[in-house]
View 1 (cartoon, rainbow, N blue to C red):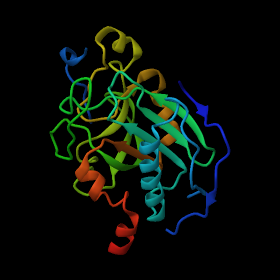
View 2: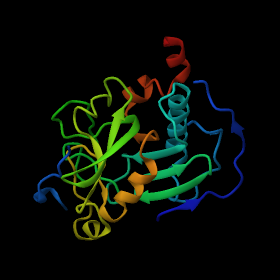
View 3: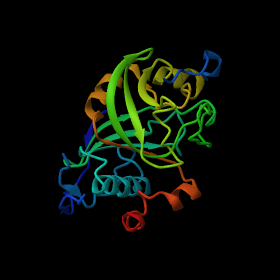
View 4: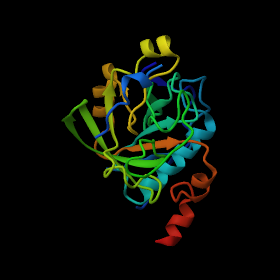
Length: 235
């Protein structure tokens, strides 16, 4: 599914707050805008699960408040879902609309069909959790690629050092799922299907938010973007 709107009106609008990866080897295959206060309940799988969406919006709001996020676009990756499911959503927050709902890869050392381990360590070949800011694009070994800046110290802030980028990959497709029961895995990058990669990157580049979720208790408890009052006091 690519695109879709959520039924029902938006409940309220708040004022703006102040404020190079390589694929795993083939054998592994098998300015800020007004902020939405609440979105209506997700419909089926067209939207992220309610609890994941709530956390993603909390992190997005906090990122805006501190000046990290400049565009009202939020990408949500739910790594608690298996890679055979479409677990990436691109949401136009201002318009209350899902723009894309796609497959996305996790790191080869994060798990097999499901991702269960995450890291910020260089060379880990694992995915990272938390809030990222999208940056500029370049053309590399995987074609058009989007640089990501990790905003959470100790969780994802080595993303640039690790060359964690969004790019297209031929091991991410429904055909691969049909054949192997899952998509292929990257070296930590959130790789997308090649037929939609450029469209997604063009929509989210240059200052939007990417939120990567997994129910990791330590991260959920410590993330400054999920506990924004704490983050504000620390400043």
